[in-house]
Structures are given as structure tokens and as C-alpha cells.
Amino acid sequence: MPTSSVFPPGLVVARRELLRERGISNDRIRTALRTGRWQEPVRGVVVGHSGALTQRERWLVGLAFGGEDSCLSHHSALLLWGARAQELAAGRRVAGALGNYRAQPEGGLVEISRPHGQHMSSHGLVVVHQSRRPLEAVVLSGLRTTSAARAAIDVALTCRRRRDIDHVISDVLQRGLATVDDLVRERRLAGRLAGRGLRAALADARRGMRSVGESDLRRVVLAAGLPEPEWNAPIETAAGTYFVDALWRHKRVAAEADGLAYHLSARDWGADLRRQNAIHGAGVVLLRFPVRRLRDEERACGDELRPLVA
Image (tube, rainbow, N blue to C red; front, top):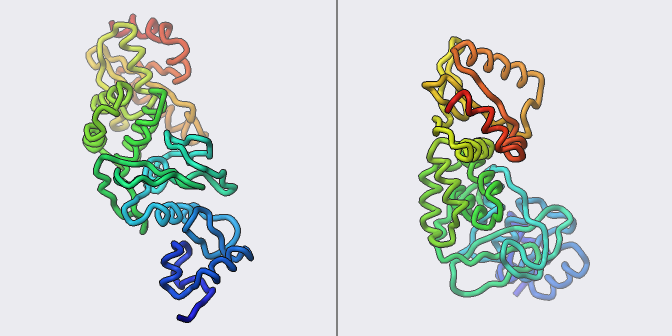
């Protein structure tokens, strides 16, 4: 059988057995790896060049390592869908999975999911999650992945803080990557794995809340014993329709939670002032609370709202 040391055309990442099927012998593979022309970031998966891997190449390595039944999941899937997420760093245990991980100079680890059954250990840059739930993988940009809703719920299941759960849920909703019904369906499939924090975050989403700040504002309202407002409510003004985080319509009072990314530019600030003036012109008093203050001064924020809405 003829042998070659040229990586198969059209491929950047391939399993060793595929290379052998393409006529590249084990000796040729070992030589290319030893001389540094190729690299093997995880056992059995070869990359046809030296040096750093791109994010897509790392994803391809993860999928090749996991096999045809695997798909990108968790943080990796969220990133592929365009959500706000960070890749995981190497450690003794990553996202609940033990493994022989290696820190990557060019980025974080790749998370994949496989059907529960034949066990596969995490290794190198790949975190392997075993799933008892149907994966229902889809193809996005040529890569197998879970849906954005499934990825968001999977990540939320690994979060320890309610605030982190709120972040991932609100992000996929704001970007239009999933609906509340999509998320609720995935939560139900997770069964008892879904804790109280995730259930509460989805309940808030059903009320119309689409940001972490709105959830913080609701906790202030409940702690102060104030009546429940409309959430993400529209206000008709002379300049058009604007939405506010919370609205006590019969009291003509609204409240908003301003996040850390607030007022990024002079243009944003000017548009916000016009919006605020329009809401005031419609006869609605608008109170604004920085998210950090809602968390650090819960009682004081409630006291400021009480005279106007109680």
C-alpha cells in the first residue's frame, strides 16, 4: 500500500485511523509528529500543522476525539451560537468531570457531550460530558452542537450562584437564541438535576424579565413586600413606545436596574436621556438603581420605592 506524509486535502484535523485509511502509515504519522510538522493535542487525533490552534480547530479536535455520537455542548456550544460565554480553564476537575487536562496557550478547553453508555474519559483539551438526555444535535457552521437552549441549561446546571444562572438565561433570551418555552422544555428534560435557582430564573423569564438586573430588582420588590409590577412593560410616549424593567401602571411609577455596562458612549447616554425625558413627559416617574446597589443596599432601595408604589 502506498504511503504519504501529506495531510489529506480538505482536512485540518483527523483521527489516526482516518489517516491510515487515506494511505498514511503509522511510521509516517509518528515521523510527522516527532519532527513537529503535525501535532496530536489529544490521543488519537492529529492536526496537520504545528503551532497554535484556532478556536474552530480546537472544536474540530474535540468532535474528532468524541466520535460521531458527540457534539459540542455547554460553554463551547454557547460560543458557537454567538452567546456570551467563556471557555473553561484546565484543572483537576472541570465542570464536574475528572480528566488529565492540559492548559492551552491559545484558549480554553472544549466541551462535548456523548450519549450515556460507553464511558470516555476527558483528556487534554477536551471535557467529555456523559448525557442520559437525548442530545438532538444540530449542525451549525459545519459543526455538530446542541441547541442554544440545551447549552444554556447545561451551563446553568453547573452554576453555583443564582446570579450566574440569571446571566446565561438572560443572554440567550436577549440574543434571540432560544425562547422561554425552549428553555423550560430543556429544564424539564433535566429532571431533578434542575435546582431551585434554575427554576426561579425561568419563572422570572416567564414574567417577562430579560436581564440579571431585573431579577435583582424583583428580589428587592419581594423583600420590601411591595405589590408585583408589570415586568418589561411598554410605555407609550410622544416619542414612541419604550420598555421599562418594572412598571406600577396605576401608580404611574417605573423602576429600572442599570447594569455595569451602562453608558458606554456619549451617543448611548444622549439617547438614554431622550428616552428618560419622554417617559417623564408621559407622566411616569422613573426610578433607577445600579445593579450593585440593588444587591448591596436591598432594604434602602425598597424604602425608596415604597412611598411611591405601596
